[in-house]
Length: 406
View 1 (cartoon, rainbow, N blue to C red):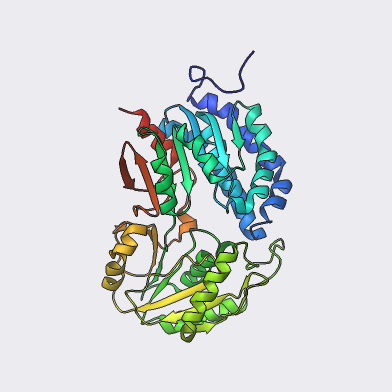
View 2 (cartoon, one colour; view 1 turned 60 degrees about the vertical axis):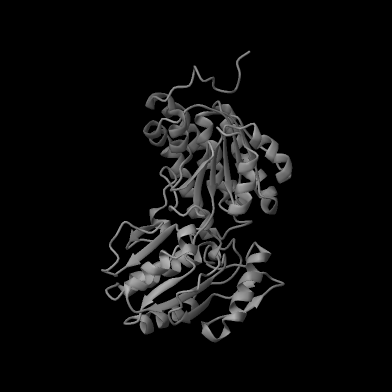
């Protein structure tokens, strides 16, 4: 009897072999689009869900190029902690694409969205199995799933770095651990910025899925020469933001999915009430956070939390050295991810401390599912193997390729 798992000897990384498998998988996404959108809009706005769908399709279509480029060694088993957002995209990145070079994949969905994650798996799992992949969804406790991790060649973890360290302690030395955290992803609006483009980009970077994404920016540094105009433009734009049901195509901000994000936003807005320029309202019963703008003078010791809500925080700076110093602080060195720069001629590097610089682009413009993701801050994106840990942009196939090479 022929196994439904591709044997290592049978597996081919030729373009022809991958091209026979990937188009039907991409076709499955297209064929089941309406069902997937219905599931995704349980936890995401319609606008964000549509973006996620096309990012997933693009990543899957790029899988042959990614695998041929990185030559990942054959993995016997992969264990994945699925995040609580970007359910389809994460399923494609850490389930469907790795199934092309992994014998068995076990995925644990976040308890917060387990039903929705299971629905994605029920829609796409049969297509993956039909083309030789073995992906199982295991809605079990984290404690129980650690046993799967201990017998896996590689583990993908998304969440708090402290929890990633607990997972690492359970793994054998030769197991590969990819830990995806988060960072503040600041935006810099400099004295030479095109303010129309910069303000549009700030709102795109902050309001994606009502702010519930690890790529959203948590702080905007604005040069003092343009601060007044930028704050006015942002306040006016936030006043026009459409608030409503996340399933409606015109809705940009909806009630939040995560109660702790609502509580966190409420606490931050209460502490910094004197800095609120626009908005500031929170309805904890409905889970609604009003699109809000805060503006502060330079405070180099302030390191904002991950808001995961539609809160825009701007801070005025006088010279680029302040931003460099802030990015080199111990806090930001640890969680450095991306920094987007608009019109600041003194920040032309490709990297500042552990943060990757995006010139005239935001994180959502540069993120690519077939390329390494993140920065060099160990709390933002870190890899562990053989007792060694490093912070760097991560891509599973690339790390599997490194693991396979002597």
